[in-house]
Amino acid sequence: MSPEIKLEDAFQARIDDEQKIEPKDWMPEKYRKTHIRQISQHAHSEIVGMLPEGNWITRAPSLRRKVGLLAKVQDEAGHGLYLYSAAETLGISRDELFDQLHTGKAKYSSIFNYPTLSWADIGAIGWLVDGAAIINQVMLTRTSYGPYARAMVRICKEESFHQRQGYEIMLTLCQGTPEQKAMAQDALNRFWWPSLMMFGPRDAESPNTEQSVKWKIKRKTNDELRQQFIDITAPQAEYLGITIPDPDLKWNEERGHYDFGEINWDEFWQVVKGNGPCNKERLQARVDAWENGAWVREAAVAYGNKKEKESIKVKTA
Ligand SMILES: [Fe+2]
Ligand SMILES: [Fe+2]
Image 1 (tube, protein in one colour):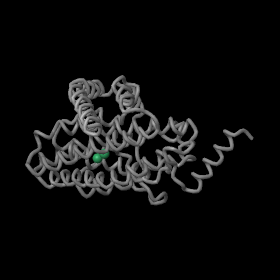
Image 2 (image 1 turned 180 degrees about the horizontal axis):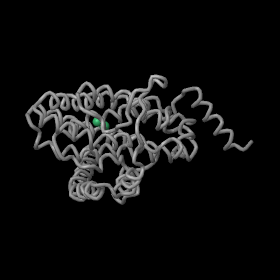
Image 3 (image 1 turned 180 degrees about the vertical axis):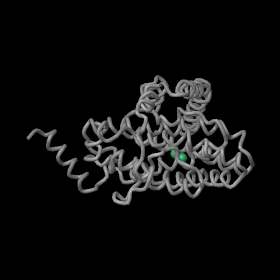
Image 4 (image 1 turned 45 degrees about the vertical axis):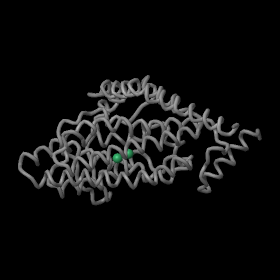
């Protein structure tokens, strides 16, 4: 047996034994690369995800709503920062990660390439998008890579606040005037299918799933998570009194789950490939923020250097 195979066997045995893998532990190169890809994609999603909601901060309908939305968007920035830090423990720099985002090499969740056209969209995003994110992230609190799993514990607590503030916006609109209720229905119509797409392609078309489950990066498949989300969300829509835009959605007593209609996978792949309604705008906003913020980074480095020089002077005096 080659030393490499022995190491791999010992690595798998640790994972099977539910031990966490830490940054300085030996790991297969593919495990490291998969994690860099997944964690950075997750970090980018948090940061790009601030854009559609940031769009409504100045137009929130009341002070209370503004405070809630501001807090949520700031939380997402924090999530991005924890996750970039977790990715850095695998030996990639923050600059490289940003470069991958800005050059289009790295992906982020396609859901953020859809526009936010009305205030109700902010409700629908909290309810559906953060709701879908929680399903995925609760699973990730038990992922095998220690820094990623620990970041998820805190993130999940904040995500459940996001989901609830979104649902509360929907509830208020649905109990309001007919126009407000129609606005909530319109937001559900536009965000329902893209939210289901957040769980990724069907299992049969998801080549990495098997390895990810073996390494306990994922503990449930895309289809299992999607079903879980639908089963939780369908009764919530019923309570709101609005209709999920899927004529095939109905409870299946035998399966103990909701059946649902066909997802438009063509739309999914188009958005992934960069042809969604807002892909260019989102990426440009990130690139502009990076370029316009260059002076802040330069000033911080200059200040750091100055402080270091001063402390050397004090020590040698
Ligand atoms: Fe988040
Ligand atoms: Fe969130």
